[in-house]
Image (cartoon, rainbow, N blue to C red; front, side, top):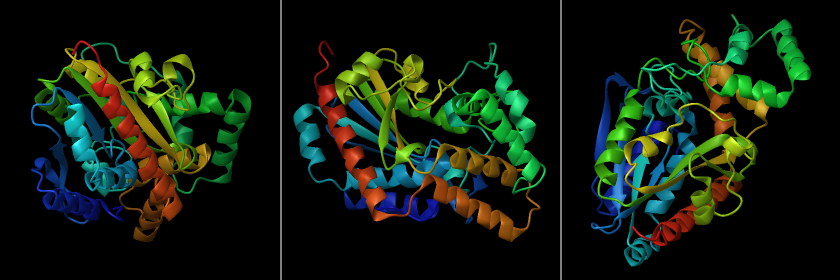
Length: 355
């Protein structure tokens, strides 16, 4: 159920949907081909009672390279023979959005075709954008002229961490920024195709729903294989559905920084008529500094198309290894925890009173 490329993952998702006799709603990213020349698209499947007023949304590849994990979890859930009967019993449907950022998934990048981080893009671009002075201070160090970075660059970043602390470094780098379009964690200058597509899907499939939940699959932070449940929005409801171990950046309990414009905000922006709760499941892979170094390499290789092919291929291989552990135990942890979270959400949705 897990794949080695976006192209393979997409075909496996489509084949699984066909085997389950499920219709696929495909949203194509026009004008851009994938790394292997393939079509780039977000593919959407809805399962469960046709008249369900409660909906659980599952998304993969918000951060493209992390799609290997989310795609595998989605395919495993489509193949789960127990879920259809349970959803019928509870009156809850599921909407699986495969590869909402297909460009990043295909090109082994975190960001979109415009170097936009989707979890920083759901902001009001007509108003004042969030400021991040810490990132501005670090930008030139984070994206050096050559890769791999030289000794002086490594020492300068180590000095920043020693002076300010690991958490301050993580916040400065990851919170999001809107001033350096060729930089890391760039929120964009306008709403990205993927964000617009997600809003359209939520408006279409959530319009008649009175309660909506959302699980967004991610990798990169935390102990290897452990799925940290991170809430953006209504923490109380999320903890009722998913348990007391749900964390939140807003109250300082999360391993993630309190970022601006997460994609999960599109649910609140689009479906304010419904009772909503959303979490990202963040599966750990490699140590934080190693993970951030690979994101630095991701931005560097994007903006150095003339770099030697061997170097570009090696960077992409290392990036993939930082966000997807090619190991049966790790993959088993992903599927097992995803299934538990889905079951918790289905029961949580079914218990919403007054809807």
